[in-house]
Image (cartoon, rainbow over all chains, first blue to last red; front, side, top):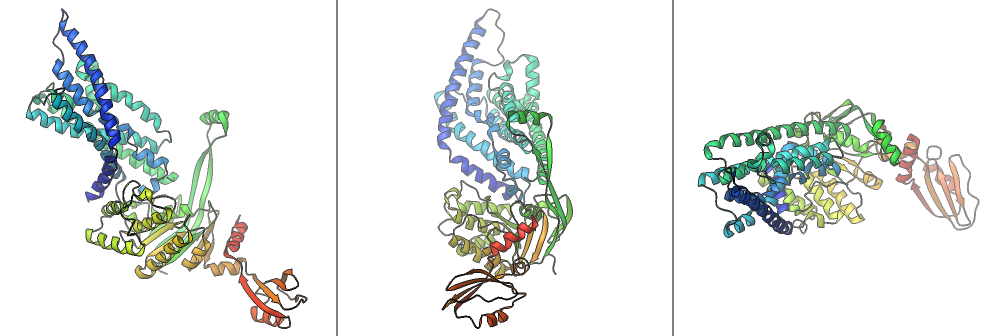
Length: 269
Length: 326
């Protein structure tokens, strides 16, 4: 039963593992941008804390750099609108062949998309984490528990990221130019996930909005757990939000796929 | 007749958004969309018994693929009823597709970047085939379709003929009692075509697999399918054998007579002289008016050296049928 979905996952993962050169190039870029981000934040934060009216920082300098480097390592979590699964299927007219398989289409595509999110990300994250930890750019998690919760939150971020990608690419089942919607999503992703500015630094009202949206669960939640900005007794809320959004987006995506398939069955895929 | 597949009054119309060419057309299309109804099937009925090999013929755009897609459960008709093995295909898609195999000559169901064997493993899991059964079937199919050297190669490196053999195997891993083949030999060279053909025949004979085949290769249909359904313009034109079709549409036989000396061609009802040279006549015979024994009598007095009787080529017969339908 499970293997009907696990095997497609494994197959997609096997394909992704082949792109090692892309991963290497990605690591170089992610390091370069990480360095720039680090320099900017260090400059700003040092200046802010040196000024006369210094207020306590939302994240300390060390927390901020850890947040940045861990975020750089898992940057590919935000590139999931590139998951082509459904758009590829619809445009190439291969939908007919996909429907011939005795599986739930959403589950089948989700399994493959998850591999396409997970593997490229892991191929970059593992060496980057090793280098960052070895060079002291990144400190180990504040505690073993924090590390554990970070791992759980990261795992959830992968599920969430895939669910979001599926929902976006499902738009292709209605529109030939699903690209339009796909082009809108990155803006939200980048500004509201914490990857440009950690959400802790946003003005209160905007931070509240950002934390309520699903994008925070892609990056900000695991990163803040790691650096201890969310203490373990505060962790339940953010983790629950992450889980709820994951379930909600999966449900929404599943419904969208069912509707889209019904339409395709009528219009001819 | 055992109605393994029962289709009655099947109808399907597609709606296509039309747009005038050019920038102006594109702008106008924003304001006002023209939808054109394109009927693909307009009331088709037939029954196919278990274990049959049936050919589905028709000119391009006749509705063949639409019919196959509906039978395969991936397209919903507008009207009509269909049952395949007791199920309505599109209502129980997952259960239905678990019991059929499909090969679309123009599409692949294999994983492009992975070795063939890997695709088979994945398909085995998707169809929930028992590990032991899967291994046994892969061995059998690999032997029959000569896949030995191909199993470890990524699908994208295969030639069309090699890939098609793999596609056939892939469609049969779950041992479906019903196989749909949509132009399975399109683009294949002669040896590859023959290999696919004999494989299909063998499969039908040994496992009783019901096969519904579309093809533009009429030789193929003639050798494989004792029964053909001809669809054109969304309607059933003929349900019978190609021999029936030939009798109905183009009964004329062409007789070439070589002569030892120049002679005047005979005159008879049902005999038309196509060509007459010093040493050869080419005659067209309508066997209904001039049966072969009578023809022999007519030719008895002529200085005949050699004689060849040929039926109208099936391509011509079918072309004529399509033209009549148009």
